[in-house]
Image (cartoon, rainbow over all chains, first blue to last red):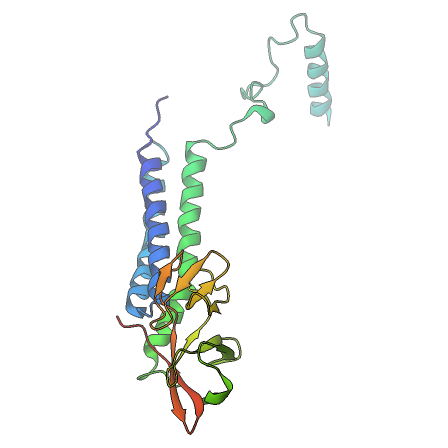
Length: 61
Length: 188
């Protein structure tokens, strides 16, 4: 059966964003931009349920 | 018990079979799955791993967010205690002394760059927190770990991996003694 690799691609992109946001949050923290740190931390948190949703939709296609 | 006995008997028969394979006693079609030849990571397993990674990343940024919240909830500027560092006459021009400020765990360097000019920086390298040294010959602050260099008058990184300036410590000189009065905020 031919599988869809759309979910794999999407989750790889989520991982890329995770790395990006984590890096940005920590940099912003050391630069004392505390607002930006909180924004990036929240974005990183939001990505987890997004990843779960992508997995749920894509696991059986 | 009797059933088990029967099963054993059929298995025994199977091995005695002429072609040793057909027909199979079991009907669950698992006889062709070899545990050692299974794929270790299939598409779905890989997706699960990525979801797990997203969870780990989410949790790992939580403490940073919490620390940032704490910093934001503080009223006004951060207060620092004044601390005596050294007598100005005890440091020759072009020499440096090490001290700790604001706490014992924050090492810092005071450099006398001129007759009346003194600067001080927290000397944990902004790359990976190695201690930064004062290089008198080059007139630069040097991190020996990865050859990071910092400008002595501003604390800005001039070469190597560090991207962020060293946190500067504000100083006052009163009657020939140098006091640390605070750590400068980064200009945003």
